[in-house]
Length: 117
Length: 117
DNA sequence: ATTATAGTTGAATAGTTGTTCAACTGTCAA
DNA sequence: TTGACAGTTGAACAACTATTCAACTATAAT
Image (cartoon, rainbow over all chains, first blue to last red; front, side):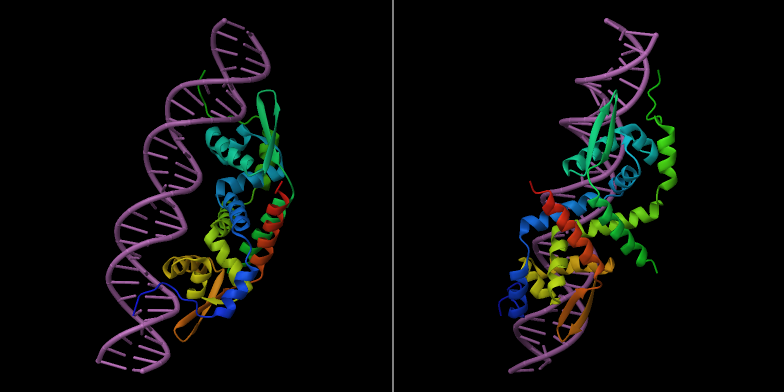
């Protein structure tokens, strides 16, 4: 017989789930959001900025990375609207945009720590 | 003068944050967790499995992908202990491991939808 | 036994992404 | 106006990863 790829086996389930499925754009937005936190450098930066606003240089020193690397990642975080910045003289001070992320971070942390066994 | 990379500017802040910093292993685990949900295919699969347990074939049909691609991603989700499976005849039925992920997903969804403007 | 189907797997490919490097801007101080 | 420093940027490189392809296993039915 022909080698067709994937016929539906349980029509009822598939149709039912398809009806409840959120639209592609939203799923993309959600996974893009997770992608941002899915890099340990960015995750650390968010964690650090949650503790205190900081300039690029201090973030770099804290994490033991170059200013360039940190600046690139801050750009990513800015594009994702997770951090904002203000200028103070030569320095640029970054801070978190909202508290929302903190909640998600802490829930994820719970989840991860729970699994450690 | 020498071109040193990144001297600490605000000792007090950096030291204070350093003391509150969570350890590297934990940050890695958390960002690895986010990385899993940071792919739209896997995000969709998790979303679908939250609505109903499903076999590989139906997941593939629902998402319009090959069984192979889905199977590979299911392997990733299994390794991350986010899904489990049971066998029914020729079929392998996958389901979510816990409710924890659902919470995080929904919080992230809130966050994303809130920003849409 | 043979055929069809559900699913898995490893290798290969193509696309993505994090960091480095070097060159740049803007601000402050002498 | 010159030098030093905080930060940004684009290009390049290396590492990673999602999907495809082909070959495979296992179960069920004829």
